Image (cartoon, rainbow, N blue to C red; front, side, top):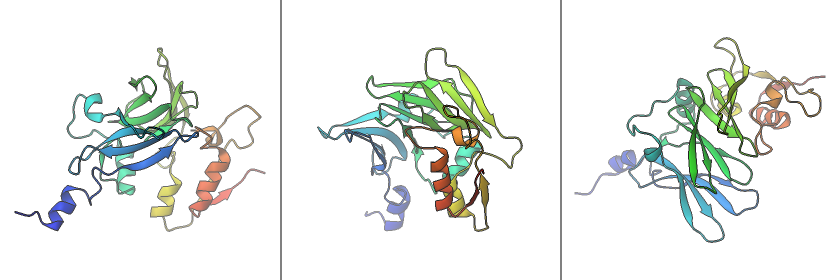
Length: 237
């Protein structure tokens, strides 16, 4: 019996399962990272890497192998809310961030931070605090910045695994947010201020110094993202 269109649409999450998505190209153009599930009815996304010279595809990280429990994901509330805002219907690895060469790629699963060393083919679970999301590796792959609760933290990828709180915001109404969320969900006027823009050369402070990876996340990039979202920004004199 032929499966009806509504059933096919529901089973394949709108015919998105099994299709590649979320592409990132390395600075030298030799590597392309992307996400893809194993088939058209598998909702678990794996992290893949494409060698543009040979056309070879490699599975960098498979959530089924990394997590002992492959059942329902235990997502932090902030990550669950982010997925709902983004209309994310997939599971497994749904977002990632890499250094400019895509030699080191960070992502989260069940609120845990993972760092993949592409050259060595090793994926390590870093000793981050529970409830982690939005990880960003440093350009040298030695540290990973991430958000947990309302705090910005940095965990060392070396053997000692030092985890440090960088900035924490008091209360439930202040957090490290997303300009994309404002653009998609907020209709009222929004005003933003980025602290730390006037930090001395070589120093990083406040929001301006937080989550900078691969040339992204600088104060000017944050201003541009907020401006593009229609947010009025207050700049330091």
